[in-house]
Image (cartoon, helix red, strand yellow):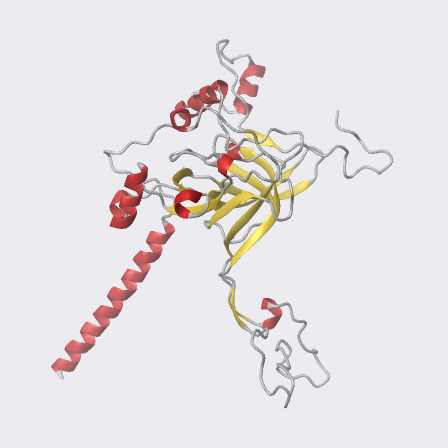
Amino acid sequence: MLARLGRALASAGAAEGSKDRVVKKKIRKARQFRRVLTPTEEVLPPHQAFAESLPESEAPYVAGSSRRVGVLALKCGMVPEWDVWGVRHALTVLKLEDVRVIQVKRDETEGYTALQVGAGLRNPKRVNQPMAGHFARAGQLPTERLAEFRVSEDAILPVGTPITARHFIPGQYVDVTGITAGKGFAGVMKRWGFGGQRATHGVSKTHRQMGSTGNSTSPGKVWKGKKMPGQMGGEQRTAEALQVFKIDVKRNLVYLRGSVPGKTGTVLKMRDCFRVKSNPFPEDMTVPFPTWKPTEEDLKAMKAWESGAALPAMEVERMREAGTLPADYEEQPPYEIVMRPAGTDPMAPEEGGIAVV
């Protein structure tokens, strides 16, 4: 009796320990993109990292043949935004967190040309030995996520090159790949959009069922791939040709028109759109190729943002109206770069549209 009781208690303790391990694993997964560093390690400020990593010379972008590297972005949610014409847009906010090049793969050694990109900073104590060696050979701090993007020969970037939101241009089109949100076990009406059966006239308890699954004697079976109830979501999907509405330079945010796969907190892959659009960039705008390289004014503004010397635009306007703005205050460039509005008011009559001045 006592032996059985002891075994039961041991089994219960093991089950409780297993449950605790599952909970701890979920907590670790929820801590993605946390900036956890040991005191002996140091990360260069963004303005200094830019100056030390980017190459001096850049090849021009060639439409149709040049292919730039993509990025890893964190989905922060969706927000509404109104343009200059008062038209409301549903925007998805994506954040680029410490995105940089980790490895260069060339055709001579790997058989193809690609760049491995990492995002987020990972605690070095939680990196296994193979990955620790991989980051040590690259001379980079461990990252939370890694992804590989095929690029053209003229778009290769050196290891350690940071990639920010200025890599993208407001008005261009991008493709976003991610894992869709899990919906659980779903019926055919929710999963496949079936119409269901009739509400009355002899139908009982089968209003949302699929109905027939195939013929009778011939073929005498249910074909593979038949649309049936099952697990919905949790699959890789790509949202193509999403337009960049605006970018936030200071916080490294990219605002896209429309929705993207995954729920809030999902890590997504974003790159230039080539399948739907032959040229994803606006024709009259300069493409940052192979990525955006800051000028002296940009580096100065980035340094001011990091030190906190730059004031918000609304605060500067308020102080200017009140006459309390210091005379030696240097005006900083705007944080946000918004897509160019349409040439005419979309709500105005066709023959009398209001043109942009």
